[in-house]
Image (cartoon, rainbow, N blue to C red; front, side):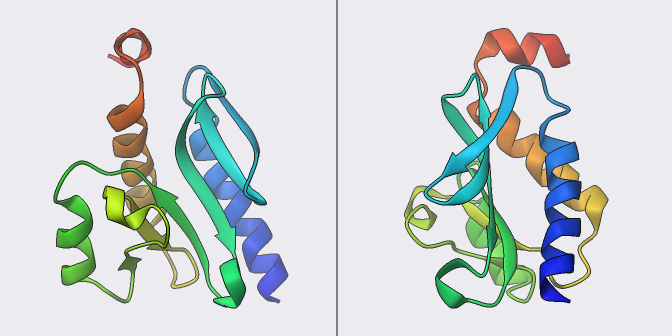
Length: 123
């Protein structure tokens, strides 16, 4: 059952991420990850990362967002290993996520790292 949940979550995340211009998906450190121009990561998808038994994504976030979200709702948000020190936000997807909110978080992550030339395509 958990495998099915991960497949459903990855399908949803993939649809959100690949809707942005000049994005692609490839494995990075063994996890499906989404890139801008195959260079800048804006979402990493994780299923049971280091036997966590969780399904989640990691996204770059503007300064202060990670702390605010984790403090407000630690059952839904976390500081991911490795990149958490750089302000990335972890979002659990195995707790009935609000997919509109997830899409908003992905949008913010994309806009946080996208070059200005790509941002002009969105606005």
